Image (cartoon, rainbow, N blue to C red):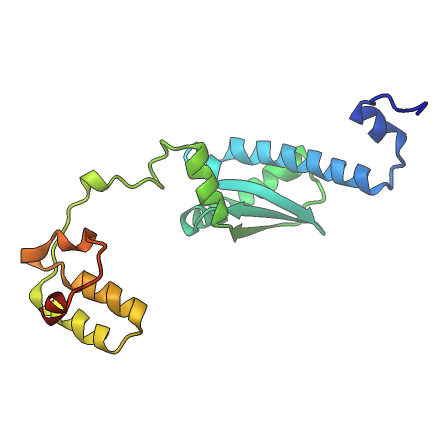
Length: 180
């Protein structure tokens, strides 16, 4: 009970050996935070919430991004990012690996709800009804499909020009609706 006083975490890191696993994790976390800062400064403001430095191993920096659009932009800017990170933090950096992590998109939408790339406004979308020919094709495909898919296709087939609002009806189909 003699040593039960709280200690600062900085003191704990200073007292550990340099080969300690906790010290290693702390140093890598600091490096990743610095790399994230450089990455966010180099990226356009619209892409910042959707890209993050995930790991650094064997001379390779792993960057995660939310979607393919961001991936293509990062591939285009890969050499500039490599140079910037080498100059400021990691001179031992050899390459950059870019991966898609769709979870970043959901986190980014929650963090940045006004971001326009990932937000759809239903009131502005124009609803186009199905033609009768398309509805008949969907019904033919539905006959050969499993029950769950069959139900969805039949509901979609109801969205012809004269029945455009029926798709939002969540009730099961009646025998009269199936015959249409």
